[in-house]
Picture 1 (cartoon, rainbow, N blue to C red):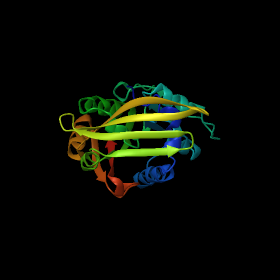
Picture 2: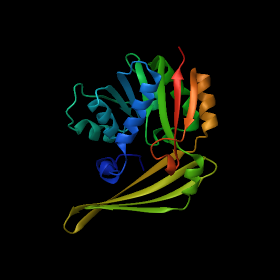
Picture 3: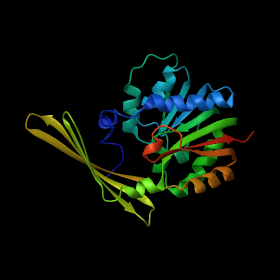
Picture 4: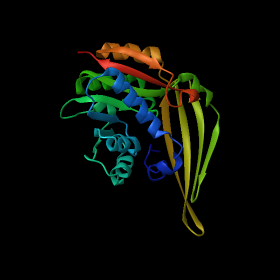
Length: 243
């Protein structure tokens, strides 16, 4: 089973309650507090690009990267009136390769939780390489406590012509929650199709993340709880690329 392939066409329909505007507001508040110039941004693990397009609509030049071809196809197909359309790249976070530097890198909505712990040092090394000196790296994670609390839970998402069933199981050896997901879509009057995916979100401790960021050359590392969905197990980490 693969991740974000069969789900891609339905992702936006299932996540219509995500406050993308609040995420964009949070980033802009961080840029304003910094006082530097933030024009070119990287949206890492961009998914279907809703946040990418929102930031482009606000006047930022956007580079967006994701490993899922299917999610990038959904992102590319969106038509939003912007000055400069985003550049979408199919890249693994640990294989990030840009042509130059960006003013800030963002990774939203559990994107960092999808990266295994042993890949984080390389991800942070590459981000340090491609963020300009003094630039910012801002990402969010679900807390380990929140992910553990999902163990054994079963969820049902139902929309017109769509039924999504998923079960969460926390694996202590992996320190990760594994989601088994079944997606039923209405093909015709008397026919439904069923596809399956498996998603893994790793429980990253803020202390470990801070240590790895510091080792990669980031400074001014802070863990924030006064953030969008902070009451739902989400926390933000902000860091500066050393000058």
